[in-house]
Length: 102
Image (cartoon, rainbow, N blue to C red; front, side, top):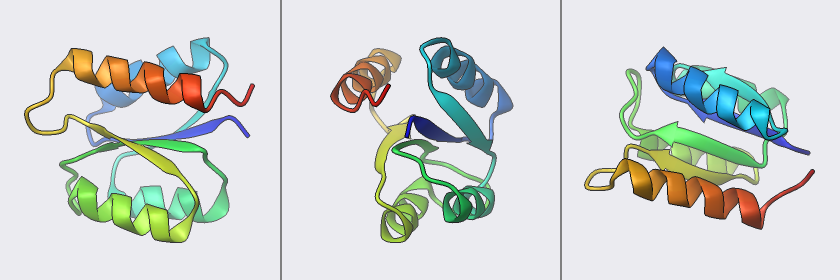
């Protein structure tokens, strides 16, 4: 399984992450809200999710809790307060190295 879920209400962020992850061999599904993310997670298996901490219909932290109860998944927060873009890039690299399923 090499499927990743990207949850962000900003289309540009979803597209950039999807393009990058596709380019290194991962299949990516996108969701623009907590509701759509939970629906996707209910019908598919993902090993990793990127979740924005600020979503239009719920906090990203609430979504993370629900996802972890619903499925066995690792989660990386997008835009965590006080963290830089470099922190996010380093976290992505570390997480993918740890869980490389291809």
